Each structure stands twice: as C-alpha cells, then as structure tokens.
Length: 283
Ligand code: PAF
Image 1 (cartoon, rainbow, N blue to C red):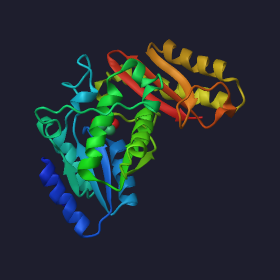
Image 2 (cartoon, rainbow, N blue to C red):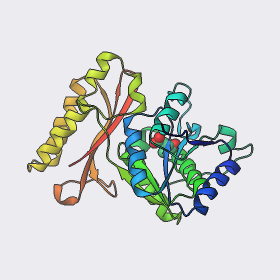
Image 3 (cartoon, rainbow, N blue to C red):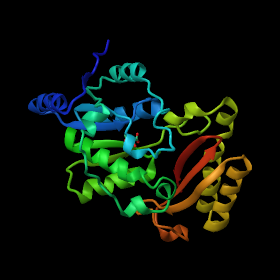
Image 4 (tube, rainbow, N blue to C red):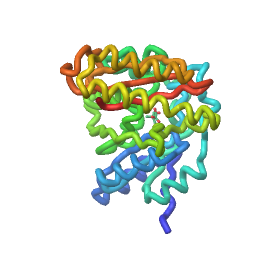
C-alpha cells in the first residue's frame, strides 16, 4: 500500500518538508493544480516522477485568477479523492495552503506578464486571468523552489506564459509541458467537464473533431483561412458559442498566415451552455 503524502498547509511547514528532501540530495518536481484531479493530472505526476526524485503537488484554488462573474465558488473541490489519487502515485508532499497563507492580510504585489499573456486569446476574454496565474505560480515556485515544474499542454497559453516568466525572472525552474490526456472520444480531460450535462458531454467532442479537421487540411496543403473557417463552422453548427478558433505560432503565439510561418498550434475556446471549454492541437 502507498503511504499518504505529507500535507503542508503553511509556508514554514512546506519549507521544513522540502528542506528535509533536499538534505537527502533529492531533486524536486512541482505539479501545480487546483485539485479536482483526473487522469490528466495523474499523467502530470507520472511525468514529474520521471523528471525528479521527489514530487510536490500543490492544490490551491487560486481566487486571483477568477473574475467575480466566474466559477471560483462552484469550482469542484474533491479533497478526499485527490489525496487518494496522489497517495496511489506515491507523491511526497501536498502543498495545500489556505487563501490567508497564500495571500496574507496586506498582500500587495502582483506579477503582470506580457508577451504570450497578451496574445489576444484567453486574455481577450479573461483579462484578469494571467496576472492571477503568474502571481500564484511565481509564489509556488519561490515557496517550493523546485528543479522542474510540470504543466499540462491543455492550457497552452498558460504553459507559454509560465515558461516565459520562469525565464524572464531567472526563477531557476525548468518548465515542462505534458501532453493533453483525452477521453476515448477525444474530449480533453478537464476538471470543468463535470459541469456538462450528458447531452452537452456528447456535443463537446466537436472541439476535438473540428481541430482535427482543420489541422488535417492545413497539413495536406490547404490554405489556413478556409481550413480554419471550416473548423469554426463545425463548432458553431453544433451549437457552441465560439470565443476564438485560431491558429498561431506554437512558441510565440503570434498570428500566422501560412504553414511555413513555423510550428503551428490551433487554439479554441467556446461556451457550451454555461460551461466554457478550451482545447488546442498541434498542426
Ligand atoms: O492550471 C491550473 O490548474 C492553474 O491555473 C494553476 C497553474 C494551478 C495556477 O493556479
């Protein structure tokens, strides 16, 4: 049977636990999460175990990355099953601060990322989001001081933002992206999929199908504009409301007009009923 991970709830307790690992010459991987763990998170933990000798998973639903109109209060919280999953993966430490430990009274500093954080994708629809993510991830990095940190490619713009931040601020952490884990029918795993009704769950597959269609056409030599318009039409015809359906340079997230403009990534965000879904795919 696997041992339960050590659970740290304050910065001093976390530091003691991490220092103990460091004394034993451990290398440390951090997997930042907001809990509601699914197989996608488990795959991040497994990659972390391959990249370091010890693994810290943070579980913190970060209020500063939610707008007042968003689902902070309703965000799924599944503590017991999260800990059981992490114990089964032999995770060493779970970092689970309360809001007051992360943002103590008088907290007044914020990281304001630019570059990929202003690419005109998620930032256009959630202008508060990357400031909140960068601030909390910056704190997680300085609290845990990991050698590597693992982020899912599912939140592709977020992955680019934290990679850039770690480099720009010399945080000494290597950021590693992990491939999106999908359900058998192609839907990307996400903690927010629990919001979907059974019918919406069926409809949601269209995002994957549309991206596969557009990527296939671009790879086959079609021009970008019609290939992307075809995919966007599929999503809209299924009844989703598109925020964006775009192809960008996979590293800079700059707009592209031709396949020759570099490695390409299709990125999509759409609302299905009241649930907002995002996904992306390499071309
Ligand atoms: O991707 C997430 O779950 C969150 O945005 C993160 C990186 C844990 C920061 O709160």
